Amino acid sequence: MQSGYKLFWSDRALDDLQNILNYLSEKWTQKDIRNFVRRLDRRLELISGNPRLFPKTTKRKNIRRSVLTKHTVIYYDMKENSVTVVTIFDPRQHPKKLKL
Image 1 (cartoon, rainbow, N blue to C red):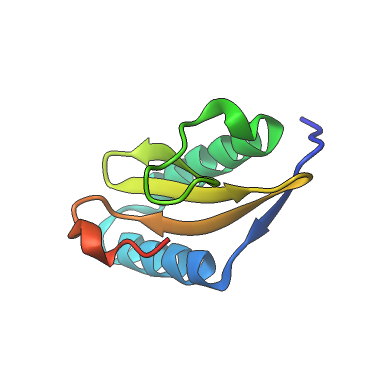
Image 2 (cartoon, rainbow, N blue to C red):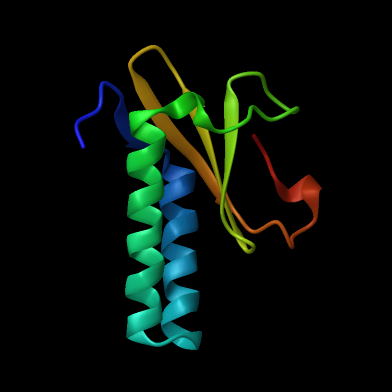
């Protein structure tokens, strides 16, 4: 799928993703990890193809929220021609830990 929006990752989001993958490698099978990564890739394609698809957060006007799994929420910032993944957050954590 070709998109008009370029996808970028913040340093924080990359750290979040690495932490998630480290955790999954300890607790899940390789098949489960591949399925998670595929699901994440498909969601990011969907976001870059149509970033207005998911709702805005109440905390910050330009940040949108996409629930990937019940334990994984993607927060991203939409600019004119780009989308930046701000963080990947586990909603089981205290909401005050979410810094947007």
